Image 1 (cartoon, helix red, strand yellow):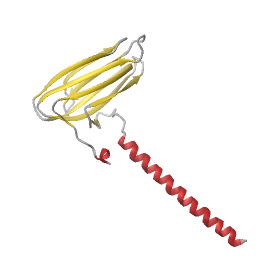
Image 2 (cartoon, helix red, strand yellow):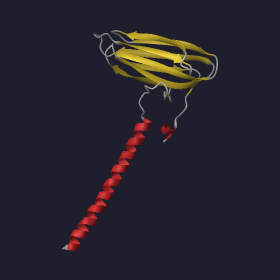
Image 3 (tube, helix red, strand yellow):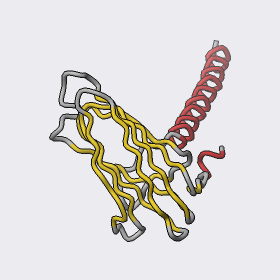
Image 4 (cartoon, helix red, strand yellow):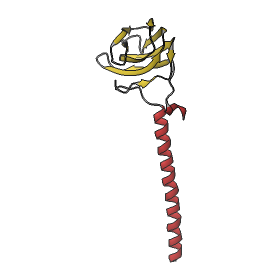
Length: 166
């Protein structure tokens, strides 16, 4: 009888070890997955490195609430083209606005604008003359209820981070 209880305890210990291993493996996978889907940065000192030519999202806040995001990318001399598409969530509400600023690494604004969407979708296209190779900080401010997509074309150099190579 004592050996039966001992064998049951050994079996329970093996099952707990397997369960613990699976829990740790699941936790590791979640950490790796969440790092590869890092959220847009709201920290100006740690901007999100842009790895593709399009960024986008949705805002469901009111017009009195703003959300700032910071991105970083590299450019070479040439014409940098920004294409911004915004669409209000509803044709009956006040829509929203999307403010953007292209800045150098000292946060000096080189070019910027505010674009609004009220009742219908809109598109803004801007050409920026880049005179030297440099790192760019892109600050965006989003407010209201709308979806947005910003596309970068031209002499943009995308750097693939280590986390996306996994």
